[in-house]
Image 1 (cartoon, protein in one colour):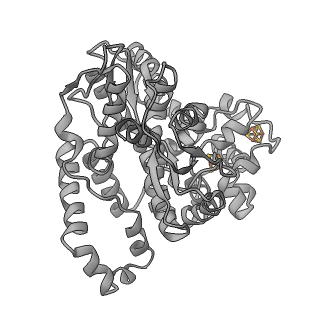
Image 2 (spheres, protein in one colour):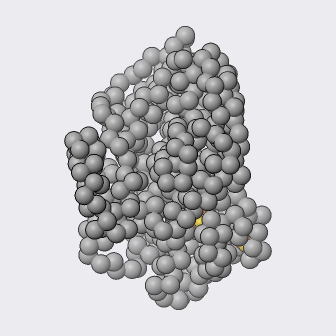
Image 3 (cartoon, protein in one colour):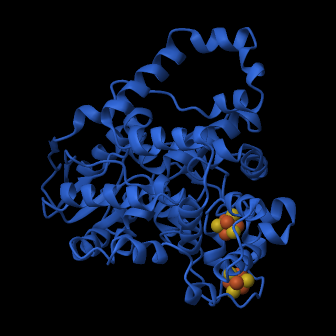
Length: 428
Ligand code: SF4
Ligand code: SF4
């Protein structure tokens, strides 16, 4: 298949658009529609606009605004009785925008640095970790805040509270290592370390390794793996996402593992779609299908086996926030709850609308900060009503957003990944 044919396929396909029968049953599931009540910011309205563009309408500022305001949370996909694959449509719509819209040079430069260099580069991420660490730990953050410097940057200054911490040592030091199973090997698995997770969620990755070991898994962290490409996909940069997919397939399929494990729901959703992403690539299509079949979210994998019972007690009330790309992207809702209920002493208190997005959505909280913060405020009201001291979730991006939410609108709740709580119960 040549490049121009591929470009055509990277646009919303009419057969996919035609599945929408305009019933509106998805509207109430949509966080942006719930927030502003605008049909054009509902799934049905966005599909209508995609149809206009597919019919030859130009891509104007209004189209860009409504498409970019979508969280790509895929709650509408779960609600839709017609089987509209909204996530696929949105990614294709953004890929088409990427092909046809000429962005200002500053935006192009920023996107090329972040997507083309930083996310796939261990060197770049290590440098970012060093800068983050220095900012937080050498008193620069305190100084910047005390003199009110952030106010000079307006909205941009508010984003500072969403910035992750660097956790040193980073997880990069574990690449190429094999961690033996405890109590007899039942499985051989590969762990995907992620990109930003290696510097900001290094302790989560370590906890994931320990919990897998405890459950009879020999865990390899294969060298050669890279960023999964989820953020590229959500931003319409599909060529780079395909490159990253090929690199991951080459690095992770070598070991003939029983499963490829991720603890990041956003990554898992994309990894499970490599088969689709590379379906027209003759050289990689079959391997991509096989790769996607092996990918498991860590909660899904642990819940599918006979879990080593945790002995330690965690006497704490916990509420669980569904990560959109686990609940709607991967249809995994029961597994994380099952693991939480297996922890002695832990009381799981469900919040209202747990499967509605928290407003994180990759880099959405940075590029669409106002809507993201409005969605977060509603989320935190539901969290606060539970009286839980801990918010558990299954995705690092959601953890960052909920940490900001707990500071801004909450009671200082702790935010933890399900696997971190399980690890604590094993170690208690
Ligand atoms: S993906 Fe989420 S924000 Fe976008 S239309 Fe669907 S429900 Fe609304
Ligand atoms: S996306 Fe599905 S639920 Fe929403 S209007 Fe179309 S058919 Fe109805």
